[in-house]
Amino acid sequence: MKESLSIHISDEEIQNLNKMIYIQYGYDFSDYSLASYKRRLSRIMINFKILNLTDLEYKLVEDELFFNVFLEEVTVNVTEMFRDPDFYKCLRRDIIPQLSTYPMIRIWHAGCSTGEEVYSLAILLKEADLLKRSLLYATDINEDVLIKAKSGSFSLELMKEYNENYKNTGGLFDLSDYYTVKDDRAIFNEEFRNRMVFSPHNLIQDKSFNEFNLILCRNVLIYFNRDLQNRVIKLFSMSLSSFGYLALGSKETLELNGVNEEFELVNKQQKIWKRKK
Ligand SMILES: C[S@@+](CC[C@H](N)C(=O)[O-])C[C@H]1O[C@@H](n2cnc3c(N)ncnc32)[C@H](O)[C@@H]1O
Image 1 (cartoon, protein in one colour):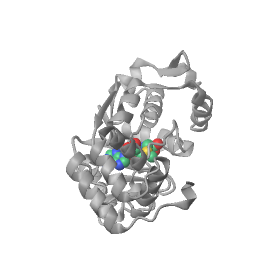
Image 2 (cartoon, protein in one colour):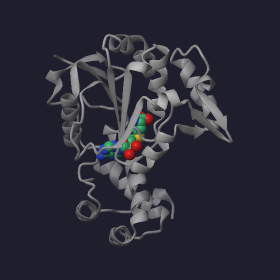
Image 3 (cartoon, helix red, strand yellow):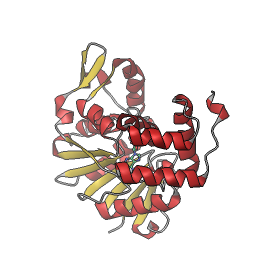
């Protein structure tokens, strides 16, 4: 079976599946963007040769380990270091100098996946001599990715590409200055990990847990429907200090509907807003 065959899934079948997942596992996918959710389900079914949604439901009820595979596929964990270098260039040039005015800088990476984004920002903070007074809280719905993020260990193979990204942000050094090599892994220096707190957090169901000067939630909201996107933006608004910054992903189409009076656009292309007082 090829993915292009794609399996027909009705909205009613999806509702039943979501109900079951919520009851058994406590995750609520009912406000994920339907088109992309259906594509993901179809992909799982093709990969595991599952012929219909009833069989998928049955497998999810029976097999907790399979639920982890399902979660990984549905939540999409693709990430990289210094993803969209122009965004990091903008942080370096315009946002980090503003953050330097705070005695203690609190940052929240919501939907941090395996952490590449968190280490990227920590490097920029170090280069601005701000790492020592920064705390980077990094959260994700998926606990497996957080274990990888905490380790600070990434495939050495990727470092050439990441180093190019880093240079394109205006980086003056070499990424290898920040890690040691062990076998085929690049292990980032302890000083970065010491400033990071990784913890599970579900943007749909969990509450605000601190007040931040910068929140990054990049390439996460694109998987949610408009209603859920707006609810999450409200959560961010409640979690930002006055004049705190919110950075979304470059593909995000949302205009901060419903809460836009609370935000001022800082950079349209890089999708950065500032919370008004
Ligand atoms: C495509 S990755 C983005 C990673 C990183 N922010 C970046 O831009 O490279 C999306 C991440 O959002 C997480 N995610 C999806 N739904 C979530 C939810 N309801 N609450 C918290 N995180 C979620 C996924 O587990 C995944 O790690």
